[in-house]
Image (cartoon, rainbow, N blue to C red; front, side, top):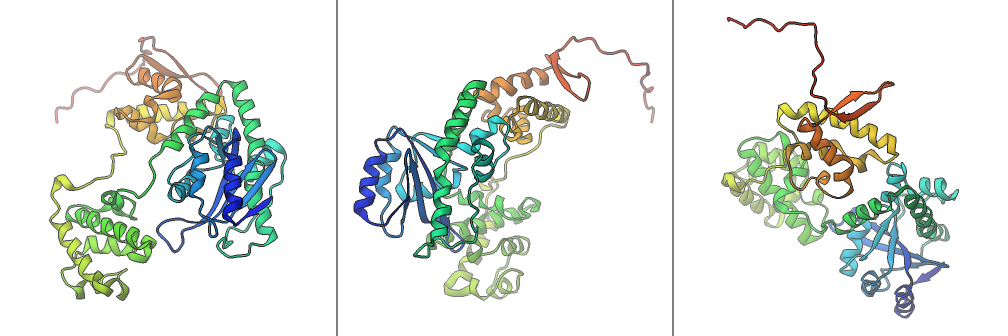
Length: 395
């Protein structure tokens, strides 16, 4: 394990990593007091070596050359790490293999790095303190050992996972999923949809929704511009209260629950009042409503049946159920959303096409004994029931 805090050593490392076919990475970052994640440590590993890079001492932007090269980057639960690296380097690895994601195709449900290392390698990874302040220098020996362990076993885990996925014919599925994660849009969320994430926002009605949209969008932009956590600018409680009781004066604003004096300093109070007025006047066509999460009542039984079948399919194939099809996936597909995950790739072949046939009446689900469900060709012959329909209701 080497510690890199000088530009020359980092340049040498970048040159070396650019020549390897496989490398691993992980990050340690904080965002408790900032809007953007603050990178505090970068760990990388390659065959025969591990390096801890101090981003507080060296500019890691040159690592972009490695990311854009032909090497495959291996990481575990990399989504947040990719966000951090994209901000620090301006890019992310061109080829990615996520061990947590890929392990889902071996029956592991979002395993931690320690759990997966133990299952696949028998490795006992050191446990760290999740409250560690990674920005403090110097790091202790224990901190360095823990940080290095986050990448030291990733390449061996990658080899085992690839071997098992190849044997089961699922490697391509895992690679598709890793690429979908890698290509996912990151960066600042759309300010006009920020109100969807405000607690209890879905209970708002009428003009309150326009106010919530305007105020939450203002909070998002202000937090990004000043690099503050959203809660430092305005709490969710304050936004909900303002939406329910739109103030027109500073006095009314200050009396609302969740609003205190710091929200009125430096002209912020007037800014909030202005966006409240804009929210009250927001045209209907400008209101950004959360996507519907339901289907026509006539199709709800199909979603329920499909959900039970997908769960059994996941168990039978030993694939993480969240990978195969969530209820949201099934709902979106049955509803006819063109961008539903079941419309493309391996999910379409495994779940989407059979589900289409089920919904359109070309297939049927039957009990196959011992609680099992069987998706079968539909015979079209209804079972004769010994029951007569009710006579017409004459009122």
